[in-house]
Image 1 (cartoon, rainbow, N blue to C red):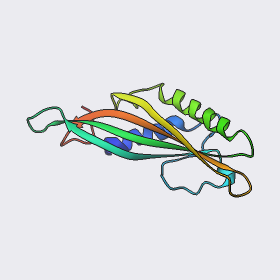
Image 2: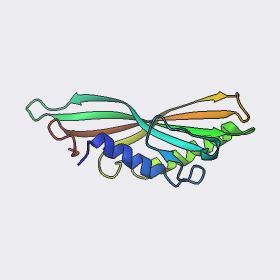
Image 3: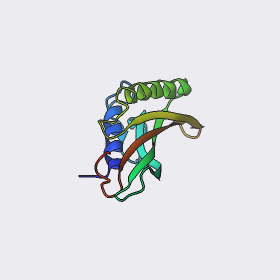
Image 4: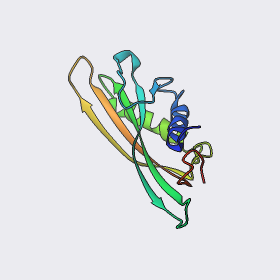
Amino acid sequence: MSHLRLLIRTNIVTTVTGLTTTASRVYASRIYPLEQGKLPGLCVYTSNESISYTTISPPRRQERILQVTIEIYASATSNLDNTLDTCSKEIEEALYTDLTRGGYAKDTRVISFESEFNGDGEKPVGVGRLTVEITYSNRENEVESAA
């Protein structure tokens, strides 16, 4: 079996695959060559995780807060903000259909959105970043099973 972090990230990739605007253009990587023909598209990756201990006796229970970034890449000559907002809406609605990420987590929350734009090239490119926070727990000697 795999680390819970991987299982949660895989669940998110599956959850956001097949959305109306981005379809199957979803990549489980922070680096993927997104060409014009693959836009709009999404990159999903883990960016940070904090761990605290909630019990004293080994094997101790760990409470983890995982941050997953979902980057939205879009290109357009007009309404680029609208495209990013539409993709963000679809992603958020999909994520909130299962807060437990298939039973691996306790909670899922979208905690931030930011965007940036680049006007170089034939068509401007916009990137929207959703930061998603997932809370889950496990025993310190069992990182493959939720506790």
